[in-house]
Image (tube, rainbow, N blue to C red; front, side, top):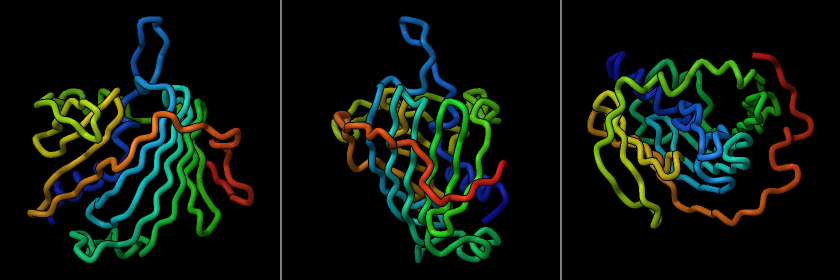
Length: 203
């Protein structure tokens, strides 16, 4: 796999929603998503791992967490890469976003990092010049607009939320797609709290 394809795969691993700084609604209030709260479950294969990701957010994305449980796929296109050599065979990870911080946690080792969300290096401008709207579709009965980036990655957006991401590398489909959406999910009091016993380092 050449360097360009490797970079594209690396970009696929990043949560596309984090590239969107948000937008203002009719009351000029900033928000990440056009939905106050939700729980979405995805199945994915990212070129290295395959598994399930659960996303829960509140306050239109100001508070958000991702739980990822995955293992290295037998058809991984990067199984012989340097990335694979230094990656865990199984992933049990948690990411928490608050208005101020982003926590990235390995639930197996109970360690993680913390960084300032307000200084995130990626914004909508990261992909804006290459973004092209190419059509509409429906996922889990939700109407989506399809965006394409660099003629490679396609993203299905619903209410500014990525319900599906897809790209093809060396004939292999790399994909993440929502399998369930719960718009009535009840946010728990400690939903976005860092688990006890986790050791964090500043990033």
